[in-house]
Length: 215
Image (cartoon, rainbow, N blue to C red; front, side, top):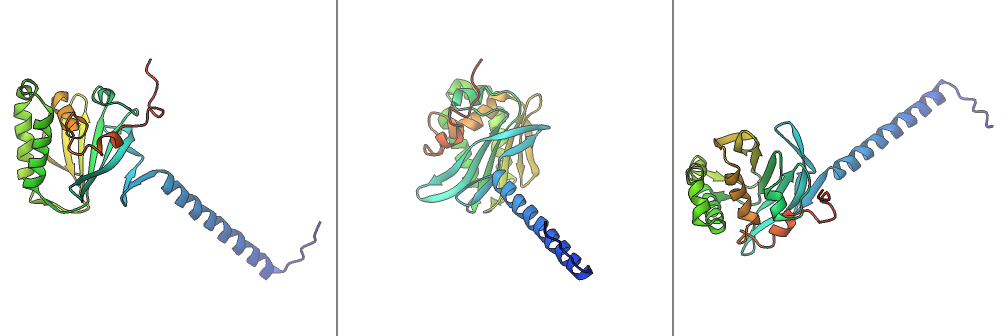
């Protein structure tokens, strides 16, 4: 045993060292924690979880929507349980969220037209007729916006028993549309047979190993 014969100054020095060590450790742990709870694509960060209607959703997949060579937005899909196939995503129970983070400025007209094209390209006339009123309301929503700016966050949420709600930077825009068929039509913009970006589609799906086994 070493006999540490310290005066008050020595005691204070040790206390200061201990406190600094604990603070540094806490900061490092916090940094590791922040890294662990965030996913990143092309410099855009997505939380690993999102709360919708009181339910905690998991980040199913994420990627970047490109047009020609330009990065338009980053997209992240949130579900209660991870799904590795389009069919399972469209049949998923509970709330869902598609989150878009703009990576460049775009006019609301261009953005709305691209959305409408994505829906039209992935629905047959029969299915489109069933939700034509909701599609029209969705298109009108973009007329309320002047433009989408780089860094803007658009959340497209589905809540069972309520419907589809859109939020821009946390503020609700447009009306709630009640039909699950309409929300699935939105998801088909990226996950349909003619997706807006064929390279983004597989990135929104979880690896098969991450999805829970079917019962």
